Image (cartoon, rainbow, N blue to C red; front, side, top):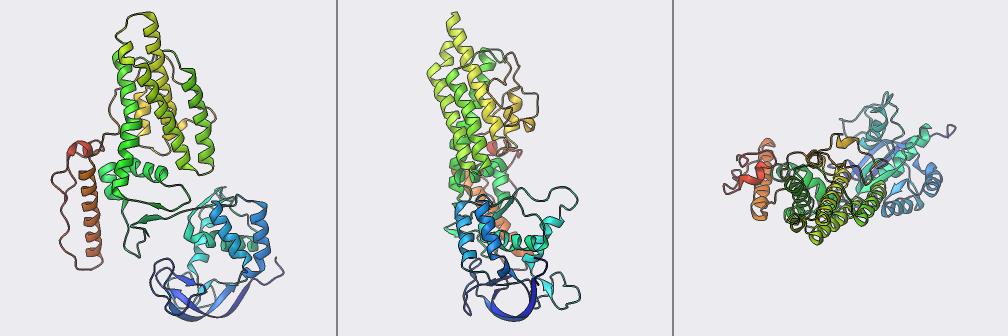
Length: 440
């Protein structure tokens, strides 16, 4: 649209949130900001406007032509509804603030933070062959900026659009959105110190349907860790590798159960499809269905009983059971590597695998990749069980301590920082690299 003037200048009056740098559409004087809840201010200023109204039809055509451009479907419907309601021209400069990027020759105008931030995406990878981006992964509250304003800016400049935009949901704490401006955040560092980063990564991707809002609590985190990682994956790895060490001198035997093999291959395809569609919870559910099936298979075969039988039939069945469990563990570990980047390589090494786990690809991952005769590595627990009461108390204390320290840095008066419970058991902290409780 090179013949049409797309930048206009005029006065604008509206409700503005100074904390989120956001004009709030259709708000009245004193109405709260929808993001942080603080009162908005009425501001009148001279702005430059981008003629967003000229792109309404082109945007709707884009959404119709490429249904995958905005996901999940709830966010796509939200954006289409917003555009169909009619677009108004967008203010892209401010004169009431000084810290923005100046508009050359137009002092005191500075660019609106969202106009500048969006253009930074492209300039950050300029010359590296990384544009257009395959994916913009964003929070749902900023979908309008990325799925309406940003595509219109790029269309106006004749620049390729990103291929896909996916908006994830909010983490809720006590039924409210976590937000620095609200002061109700839960920091990741206390969780890392007590449970490790993999535990948090797994919880967020398994517990919450990606794209929807999800609730967080320390109790739910520990429960999910113990049920799925300690009792599920960790137990399968420990019992399988320990039995290979005891019954086959640490050498992977030969033999496979066809039903488990078929399930494992189907799981690979299911996880690939789910991950491609950002359905991480569904993909992880498929992995744990495989783990559960293997656990049931081990109980049915009772290799500890077979090991006491010297006849050939029992010994062949023992080898088949052990190989089946180990190969299923290998496949599950490979599928979980993106979600458990610290823990999965430990299991991979204990299986005796020599290729880096990072080199595994969906296209080549299939049943039978564990070579019979391979020597397993030293067996050690990867997911020790965590005591709920102690762990939650420590994480809460660390969170309160961090909040108090931050308040001091901000010049606020606070009570003495809380002390970390001295009763915390060091056995599970040491599993993640600490040999004593974190100091207060």
